[in-house]
Amino acid sequence: MLGTRSEQMIELMHTQNIKPQWNASVHYRMIGAPGIYRNQKTSHNNYALTNWFQTQDRRYTNYVAIVANKLKGGESGGILNDINYIDNPNYAERIRVPTKLGGDAGVGSGIFNTDVPTGNNYEDFNAIMRHQYDLGRKDSLVNDSTVIPLFFPRVRLEHTIRYTAYKYLFSDESPQQQYYNTYYNLPSVTSLFRREDYWKELMNDFSIYTFLMKKIPSNF
Image (cartoon, rainbow, N blue to C red; front, side, top):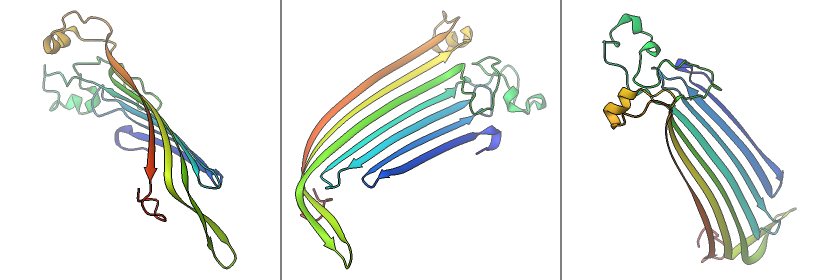
């Protein structure tokens, strides 16, 4: 999909029932835009993988999901104020207006051109696996020609493990010394400037559920 100022989006999704009790899916999305002014390029990549499985007796169920995001956003620091660029007809094309950060970096509108020389980079990764085993009573629904098996859980044993990683990075490949000295009191910034932070989380949980109503699994 194409939009104003060359915003572009690609989205793909595939889901399939491999077997009656087994489903898997893949989802990918990419969104990109060069922005109105210089150094405003943004890029968002996202993908998700899922898997669901259940035994024929419906006692055991397994869920797996993996989701990741990568977001890049340029930082211009605002436009220069040495002259009135906004009302100047020579800068009617706003992409030509000089900015405080990023210098004269080229502007690319291609969706696969995701380089951001000056800006923020956010990344997160999430993976979760949950499986559960139900104790309960079997039943069936009999029609004229078919028999539909039913299962009503009374006690559920559930285990969940989740891993999450986060990363933040600000990078300026061509820093303007005066800008960092004026706004952040960092006079020594003359070459590549980077600030980053990252952390990880691991959750491991075991739960026991009881269902109050024999034939209403949502009541627990």
